Image (tube, rainbow, N blue to C red; front, side, top):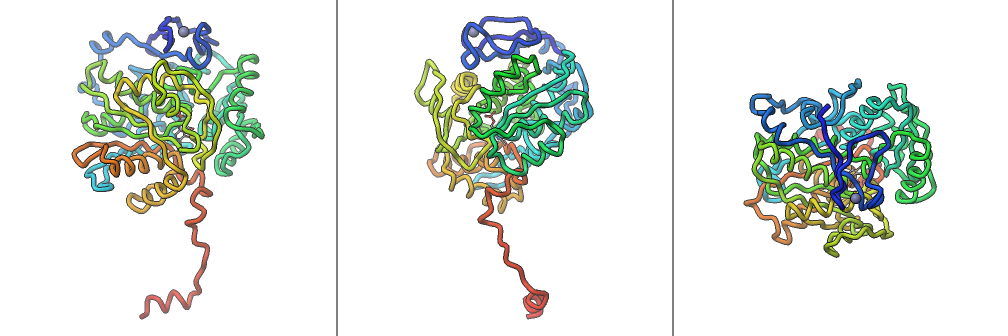
Length: 404
Ligand SMILES: Cc1ncc(COP(=O)(O)O)c(C=O)c1O
Ligand SMILES: [Zn+2]
């Protein structure tokens, strides 16, 4: 376990970690989210990564020199180490495609759940809880199924059947609540914190970002330490995008790379919560909006990690864009046709975002780009139901087709 302190993103007050400390009480739950800060100078001295031989396929725990956990669980060696493909896409050569649908529960969220489970065990907890748009919950439920800990899950009842099935078969106790994600989040926090259960909410538990940042580490080592100019990723609460920034920032801080990519957050036009706050400029003020999108995983109106997301994205000269639902569905099908990767809506938005930015000439063929595909399309087949051709043919028709 790497020693660290916690620091408030708004007032910079520093805290020593202790069980039950999730945010800076002076600043509150959204303004007072915490950052996990290590002693980078000493890590820099002791960790010559070129000597450490980081492995392009190893699990995310190979980065233990920048991780806060001690416990180990069965799944650890299978979390992360996901593929980084290269495809010629949309007129650009060698676009990097980080595909996190190949994690055990088929989404990026396993990186965070795994850290949460290990810390919960480190602290001796017997119960965990999570509110989620679907993937964080299914990830926690599945990765926690084999431990002794009890898992309470709170999700909107509208989540896709595939994610619901993951929850039910894992034996977690599931509350599929009639309400939006934002309402379910507040409800779960009210009970979970009062009861003292360990909280797997990425937007309030600073440690979860620590797992998610390993995606950035992997992009760097799998691309032979060449940092792309742009990284695009889907955004809901704002934790995944913040984690990518922190990952690149930490690798720069310990001297492994010398630049941080421009990170671009892609949201849905119908409910672009983080973009709304970012575009209004500083000081960033949390704001709740209402709306909806087919991309259930990023259907978040009151983003809880909005301050970190805006602060970090400003620091790397990135920005936020948004896509219509039609553009999102097109992104899923085009990405599938060109690469063979089937992404869920929130996973496909980076492709749609790239298409838009190329059209607007903001990204050109001289730029290097990485798309982070955060979830498998098998988690939400309904999103592309119109593309499913249910017609059938007879044996004779097949024979005729090929005998001609
Ligand atoms: C597949 C997928 N992509 C992107 C996101 C967005 O992550 P965040 O809410 O941390 O912005 C999520 C969150 O649930 C997700 O499940
Ligand atoms: Zn504070």
